[in-house]
Amino acid sequence: MRHLLITGASGNLGRELIQIFDFNQFDWIYLIGKKEKIKLLMVDTNKFEIFDGYDLSLENSVKQIFEKIHLSKEDELFVIHLVGGYVGGKYFWEFDLDDLKTMLDKNLISSFLISKYTAQKVKDCAGGSIVFISTKLSIDYESRRSVYAISKSALNFLVKIVELEGKEINLTVNALVPKIILTEENKKWITEANYSKCTSPREISEQIEFIFRNFKSLNGNLILLNG
Image 1 (cartoon, helix red, strand yellow):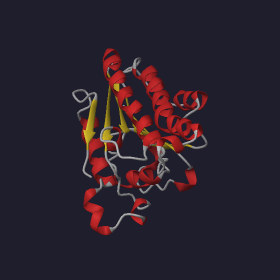
Image 2: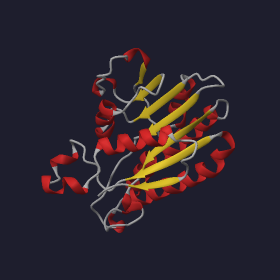
Image 3: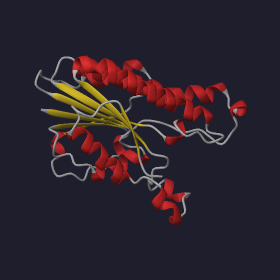
Image 4: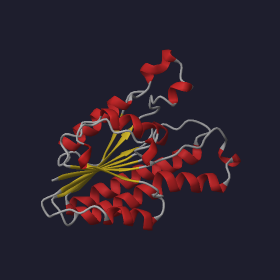
């Protein structure tokens, strides 16, 4: 059986992605987020389970989630990690230390914990794969984005760590690297003339579907997207 876990399912990107993602290739789907914000339009909702009220920057919360996911030796586990955050608009000397800690919690610590507990599950089953969402600002930096870019740069390095060490347990990892994602929320401040410079949720969905179909041969990539 193929199991899929999506974190941040009630976030701006998550709410749109679950409406267009092809779930047919999975037998069980677990969504992490606020239940009242998650709208399931799929016919077969019996194979969906929603986990609400978990802080993924806390290890005990992540541990509790993975304890609810039961895999056999023949199963595969796939994870889309959408939890993250953004703080910007100031020079590095103007940010409070709490700003950096917040970005590290949301963009790095949560990713590390998801990787850790995914690996612990995958090592006892047939294999699995993780997809993260990074940002072009971690590669091509723009001024006044420092604490955000630092946390995403650390995420990029985590991808390389999981790529190398995950090979021993049939775990692969990749990260999509957009600049701006054209969610309905982001459309409030992006002019329509600039839509073509952004990455759409559908493009992200299609990229993830492709990665998971070919997860055994795709590993350790930072995949640059439009924008």
